[in-house]
Image: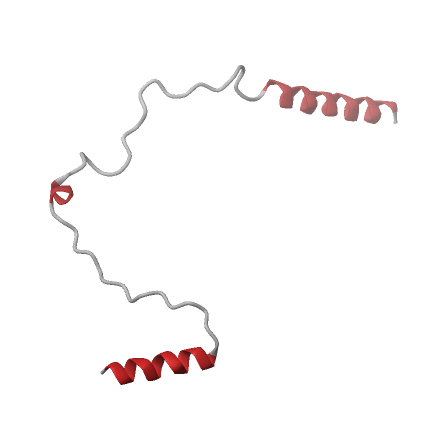
Length: 79
């Protein structure tokens, strides 16, 4: 029994020490030359072109149903 107990203590000690020796020592440092992201060099051809702007409908305020009906009647009267 004593041999088995000593063997288990030895195995536990070996595994415990193995965990302390693994890993990188010291603070992590950034790479000396950062890698380029994406594929190849960027192209700025589209930056010169003008982007068309979309016309958005006007934002309506949160009105009650009665107010909306009145506005609809006014719009119909204007037409």
